Image (cartoon, rainbow, N blue to C red):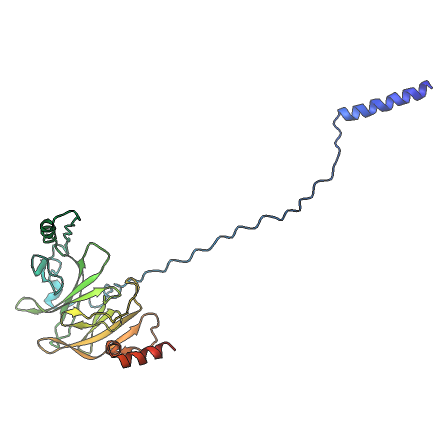
Length: 286
């Protein structure tokens, strides 16, 4: 009996020892039935469309030099007449560049100004100008190059209206034979100038935009698009008759987006005629 008691005590002592040693008891882990978190989907940003360089052709290396004395004349320090629509409020019709620039004078008005003060401030405004480039080629048929000086009107904004001054060399100095203005980028802005077959080729951005006298023509009604990114341009040709440059042939409107598309002839004449305009619009909507 003493032996049975001893075995019971021994057994209890062993259980207590195991408990004190921290015997690990394994348990069945809880099952997580929740679905995994959805992967975060990040939207791919749309690429920002690149803005075309509308001055690329004007600033390329074509026709940058000449054997004419015009090639050594300093057009960056010269006095130019202001074309119609760009005269200063005080009536001055000339502007003189100094190192290729003349800063504009904005003379801002305020709402609380009385009419006389506001008018006096506006009278102080002056057009600014900056030199862009000069191209040289012969379009008068005398065998000597003319100079085509391109200036930009500084408006203190993002607009790029430009002026073109055509000079010939006479009596030891440049003689102006044709000044004309162009519009702002897609709105009749200057794309290119060059000579072809003895004629002057002028390309302006926009549909059926061309030079008439000293100014670019107005745009076709409803012909609206972003100024930065023209979708078409117009090519027109001019021939010197000894006194003036006269337009030759048809005005051709080309697509910028589809260079292989055939040009449209004299589009303004079509759009200004109701019957022709209707027929044209029906054909383009198919």
